[in-house]
Amino acid sequence: MYDAQAVMAAARKMFVLYCKGQYQRLYDEYVAEDALFILPDHAIPLSGKADLDRHLFRANAASALARHLTGMRFEIRNASRDVFVLCGILDADQTPICNPFLSGTVFNLSCGFRATPQGLKLIILHTSIPFSERSLQRAAADIYGAVFLCAADERLSLLQMNESFISLFGYTREEIETRFSLSFLEMADPEGRKELLRFPSGPADIQETEFRVTAKGGESKWVMQRRQLCVDMSGAPYFCCILVDISAGKKLQLALSMSLRRHEIILNQTNDIIFEWDLLSDRLDLSSNWEKLFHYAPRSAFRSKILEIVRVHPDDRPALVRFFNAISQGSPYVEGEARIARADGTYLWCRGRSTQQFDQEGTPIKAIGVIANIDEEKQRAQKLMEKAERDTLTGLYNKGTVQALISEHLLSRRGDVMDALLIIDIDNFKGVNDSEGHPFGDTLLIHIAGCLNGIFRSSDLIGRIGGDEFIVLARDIPDIGIIRQKAEQLLLAVRALSSGEKHRFAVSCSIGIAIATEENTALEELYSNADWALYKAKRGGKNRYALYENDDSPVIRSAYTTFAKEIKG
Image (cartoon, rainbow, N blue to C red):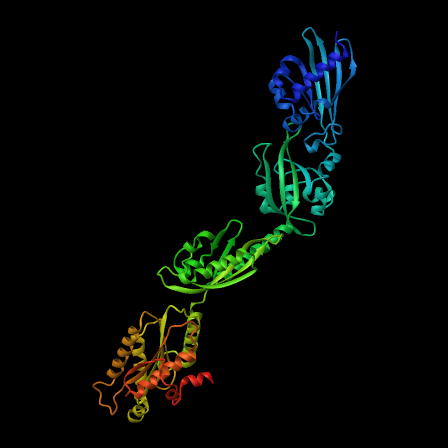
């Protein structure tokens, strides 16, 4: 009634429905009422679709096999007039299967059909997908780590293990069986067992867990486990697992954690501010010590807005820009100083130091550095500098300092501005000292220094160049009348120091003035002119000022000793 080709075509159609999970159609069209489904360990009568759904194997094998139906070969092994027995074979060596634990196995399907007036009816179906040691080894051949199968029970009973699993623990298979009763749960440290018994909700979920195990000899190892829940032909769940030894990585992680902790302790013991500038994202981050020092919270910023975030003194902004430019241009180490404002508006001197990090191609990618408060250091240095530059009695610039400052200014001055050099000499100061005593003379010098500071501007250069001689460079004056006015004020102020006092000598001073109007005027020349004017003021009766005039007689000028000769020699 049916030839071999028709029987094999019907068998293939049933197998397609079977592998694609179209159980209702398979049952309605092909399953006989007394059909029997035979598993490797037992036989189950198929009394309805519910039985078929419950006992046919599921996603792992069926979905993989359905994609490779062309590899199925059917052979009629036995036949009578109305009963046919076929054997279908899917050789995974010829047709690769996605499930690695089926790789290298042979899937067997045996079908028994009865010829009826309604067509061929399935009366027996036998399937077999054996697990084998060879399949497990082939599955793990290209996988880094220990591979094993275990039942999804409360003991995680071991079903199969590869050689990497044996090597990881150091036990033989016999020792695993006798010592742990083939329980993977017993092989894990107690602290990790609770997580191992947290089963996934379905086969699609892949669990990843890190825990410790104890190998033979007591060595503790950190492992990472990836596992997936599977279901065998009988419907029993099991786990397909991979273990990777991550002990070395954990040691590095612990060392890094301890290193970060050490750095955190060090940072907590210093007031320095740590900054990190990611050059790729152009983002600058400041540590919390910023708030402790400046009393406002640090904010991450892009370099383009750094001047808005860091309140730098206007005079120091160019230095800050140079600092960041040097970093961005790849300088391995950069250092700079600037004044940064606190929340109350006061400024602190700070020093920034930055070290560059480069990628493998040598491109700068990150700069890490510190910002240190050097305000006290700057103040101490300023005091030392002032002490070295200042006259100890009057607080004015001393001779060497004022001479250097005036020379520097004169050599760089422009020809379109007017400067005036004044030399002030206290009249009859030796007689005052002899009559009133040196303490009185010192007090007088201090008061005269106060007069000079009160009359002239802070931008003018004022110094003491001898026992009773002072010098002033009035810079950038609009006209000579201003200097005349300043000289008159000084004469009156000095005379006022002795008014109302009962002294044998009245206090007064004489002033010589020279005007600089040309570029690159030398100090020696200007001082000589002012000193000559002072000589004229003395000859004129003292207690007055005199301006240098270019038509003075050189014969008379050669008769006096000048400070210009001293600084020339």
